[in-house]
Length: 580
Image 1: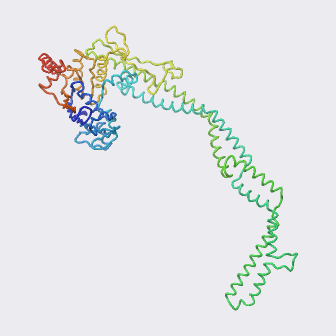
Image 2 (image 1 turned 120 degrees about the horizontal axis):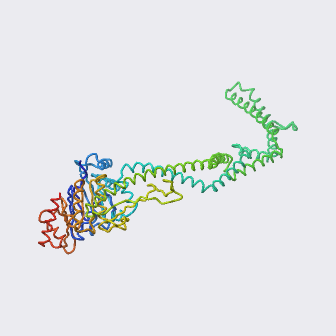
Image 3 (image 1 turned 180 degrees about the vertical axis):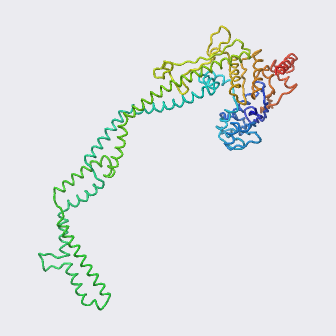
């Protein structure tokens, strides 16, 4: 099966490295060099390519930016290839080019297949391409949450399926509980709001306002308040238009217009223009009579009743009392009443809603308890297999008597969910606390690896875990940064041998200071630096033949030309080749 392989990295102006090309083997590549030469920069470079955090301090002093470029062979159709193509990246005959630039100001840019992409996309691809392990990752393995994640990862679908169902139920329970708490904790406020709305609606209902009524009443009040003046003015106007019966000698507009019409009637036949004017005067007379009649009717109908005026003002006062509280006018008061009635219906339904939510919460808690039990059983079954597999690997890493086991436990909590007759605490990942235990030798009680494992033992436990993962949930490339820390002698040889076996299934890159480990590598890279008196430069070169023997001698004895060290180095290489 073709897998993704990191073929090459070019590093420029990163830390102590000025410009170097790192050529990696498809199998096992060991990176060695003096302390401070820049070996860790190789790991840092790969971390940047995989979306790691950029830091301006990484940029070489005097440089404008640091650049890391990588070439990765990615099989067509693989998750990484599909995701890259979705982002617009181009693959060149199955090769994906990745680059990351970090400026001296701390700004960072990423490119994938010739296309500028968010740095987060590189981190997404990393999940499918590389497993990176260093000293910080060993410390991470000491966290219970990481140990549970490792067990779940090993278990695969057997845990993933019930965990997915559990997570959905947990999410719904959180939402139901939050809504229930919001309703119940605000019950007093909501009751007060309901009372206020109810009072307002009752007050409006008692008045029974009608749309536009306020404007109509304002007009009527104005008319009633000036009834005498209006009646007097109407009478005078009527007299001016139609005459006053009490003054038969008086001249009115109607009489004058009628006289004008009679004067023209006698001669209209002689001039069409004058005839037209005569007709218009006739129309004026008709209009005057109509207006005079309406003025008479207006005066007769005008209600000057003070009781009616008092009733109008009383009604207006009632409407004004509403508009002071609920709106600028009656129309707004009615709109407020409509909105408030809907809100009151909602508030009055709280009791029913509380009952519904309480029932759903209780049902979800019961369901969550059953799902948590199913999840715990799946984890327990996987834990036995996982522990046995890691124990077997430790036997190959010079820890033949070590035993690994898992402690899967729950914590009593009266507010938790019921599992197997107990009420226990629960969270988004279930009810289990998962802890990895190590008994390093017969007779030693199993203890948490944080307390029972030395640095070297912890390194081997982590390596054993990764070897087990490689057989169940492999990734194409493993990068170990001094996973052999605190290890020496026979244990170092066994680690080298196990890394070589792991490299038969995946690409393995190891930054190491142990010659016993480096001897098993298919390719050994030397990171070395020289000092020209002002600028420190580093380079990375492939070691072969005599050069590799010299480097292993240095690693063994600190002396490249020691005959004893050379003989030992050659013996290590021969043993590694024989083991392969």
